[in-house]
Length: 74
Ligand SMILES: [Zn+2]
Image (cartoon, rainbow, N blue to C red; front, side, top):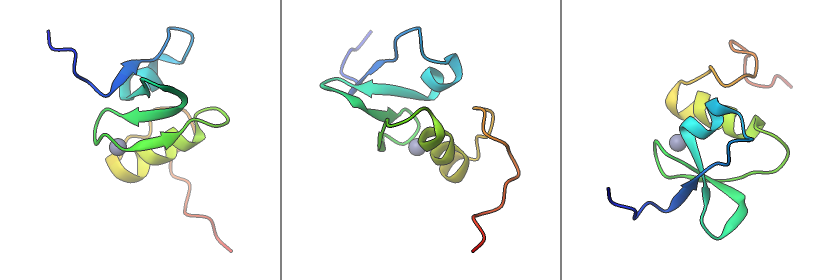
């Protein structure tokens, strides 16, 4: 198996759904990389960033945050 991916898989303590779609950057624990499009996201406070990215870019909403929420209304 080739091992040239730009990310490493998330440690098992992370939610499995997240690690299915994201890996951590090899040299930075605060950055996660989308396995679908290789976008780099900050891993700040939980997975809200990640679930937002997945739902907006890949129509994946199974990660946890409520689905069907509209864009923020001002
Ligand atoms: Zn992506």
